[in-house]
Image (cartoon, rainbow, N blue to C red):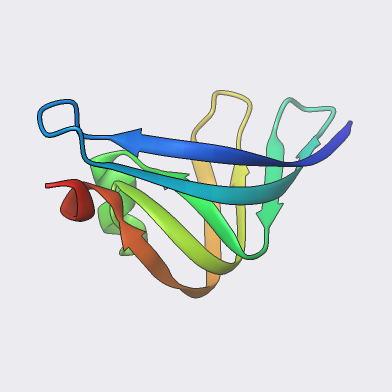
Length: 96
């Protein structure tokens, strides 16, 4: 199954009211074994566990710019992540 589309995503610091809103698009491909591959170009959201953020050298919550591809196994664990681009926004730092 293949899904494509664009969407807006917003982040808000509930203590200060400071907010960031971004536009994004992505292509999601679900495989028969339950795994998923996600590819995006331009700006895209990134949500990582602290361990995965450390493993990939990225913020736990960020907006990435460029081409990003990542794969998840059927349990939702990230099996691979590549970024040809850069971190556009470290959301936690920007909203602090």
